Image (cartoon, rainbow, N blue to C red; front, side, top):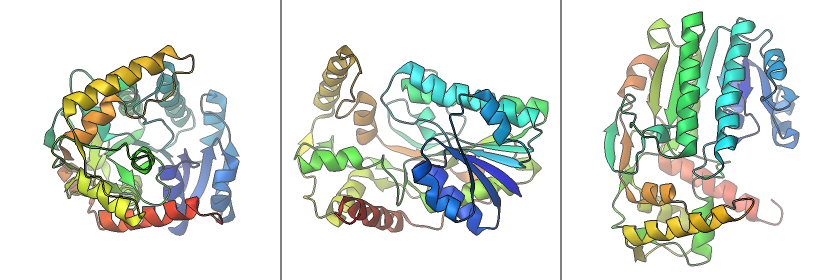
Length: 332
């Protein structure tokens, strides 16, 4: 099988490309940063640099491939609406159109379970439980992108959408980076009582889900799947485990949710006044995510994709922490 992986210069796209090559697949990759995919090219990936906002590039990339794993996109909780609309919606439109024009058989789209987060606690949330009002530009743009992908099934494209939550492992520059920085400055506080349980996804488990999506039978097609480790854990236990592994002090002080949310709102308002709209230390959405329970029902993925998470969160956290220390060392 010959596949195209978009976003291969990013964390998830890069990790999946490596697995696909190890599985003997012929892999074409796309990304914006050539230096970040050199190790994949050395392993045999065919790299084409460029921006998928160019529909002609998307079309060229899809020539002769059997399937596309679309990992390119933005999932941060802060940023301009236009940036998310371009990166998530317009790029996905171009990929879908290219798949249809070049008769690609299957498109696997990497979305996000953040679509289902409405700022309140939810346990065992199912794929169809999408709130009426989506929270933030990222969630809204991912939802629109999902509609574009699933809508292409009407024209014969086989589609599968995966919604992982809090993916981590070596290369994860998103889940813990700001929290580590805040703790180094002694500014990080446990929001609320610190007992809120959340789902994480080991990148190794997500990779297996992506691989399964490429070969899944007809009954699995044109559906959305929650992906996680299926083992909810108190969020602040995870944060403090990372701090211990990185030889940082434990987070022990608490902050009232209302106060933290109000402070985030003030910081957001101040950042919006600046021309480049710099990122606040924590956005309101991040404060809510650090305070609320949020876990997924992954039974649909288990049933239709044969998904069974095998890599524990602690294994992935150890991998992440080893990678983080290597990046911070002078020789890294």
